[in-house]
Length: 227
Image (tube, rainbow, N blue to C red):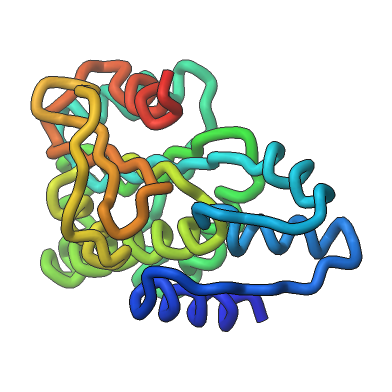
């Protein structure tokens, strides 16, 4: 039901500058769902009960790393050593279908207060093993997986998406439908915070593999939060 409402809302936003939605609100759960679906809208009016849910509305985020560069591998290690949760995608299991996007998204949602780092980045010798399946096939599969993860999380209320890897960044922005951006503060040389014109509630940080300091991911999270 929420997916169909969200699709209708997206259609309205594309077709109209101004429109009105009048949802029913009888329980606290209704209030949470209203904020989940419409909390990004510029104007909300009605009962004061909705304010509690608006103030509690989280600005959740995710980190997606597809780059296998030396810099990105060090950044992943630093983020893990700092005690943050991470999930490594196994390309073989993904190819075989024993791991799915839905399962990965469920893993991410187990940490609602954290920015989970999802990565396929690996050492060159391991990458060569996976590529025996087919270099372009594996690359395409991983890009599709990362971009679909981003799409599902944004649909579920995640507002901060941080991506390491040029091809992965391109796949993510294309899947999300973002093509024009306002450029914000610098996270690292050549890597700014970006706000999609198509959805100004979203904060993106996109980098190619070798960009950024060792603590890049924590810097990017702080920038997305406006700290």
